Length: 120
Image (tube, one colour):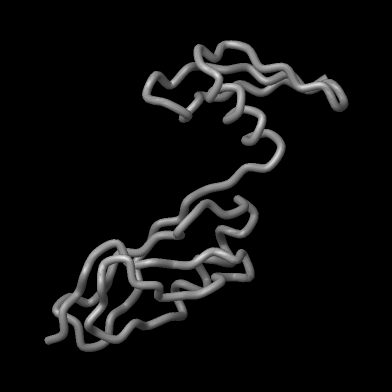
């Protein structure tokens, strides 16, 4: 039997939850809403994250544009995603929400700009 203690991020309360795993049986305690149970199970079985970073911009008003994954990716792919982000350069102008990388690191998730950058 394995036990993990987590802080739920499913809502603003931040409940301390305990996940007990015994084979295929998973029990979650400490959550005060249903989102806590969903979050805890997902976190122990298949953790995912949103990745935020920045990409260099050629000919832009500023040198870098902030970016993020459009949706969450498997936690195990974070370093692959960051390697691909670091290798890319965008051309100014960059629009808010513009897709800068399609299917980043084979995740099926796009990297999008989180701000606009004008051309110099």
